[in-house]
Image (tube, rainbow, N blue to C red; front, side, top):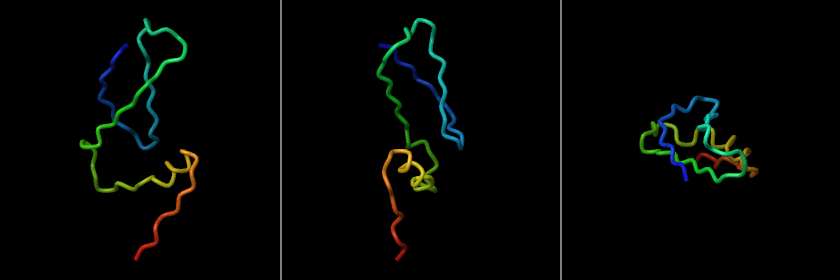
Length: 66
């Protein structure tokens, strides 16, 4: 098992590209991504949630403001 601990700035496009070391063999691997949300700016927690839900294959409706 290989563990990589990376600090990475997530840009607005939310795309991460990682070049793995040469000793990692091509083929099927389990890859886990853990985001430490404690370090994020919490001012807009729902920003982009509709797009994320579409990406996840679900339909989502925003709750009506009361």
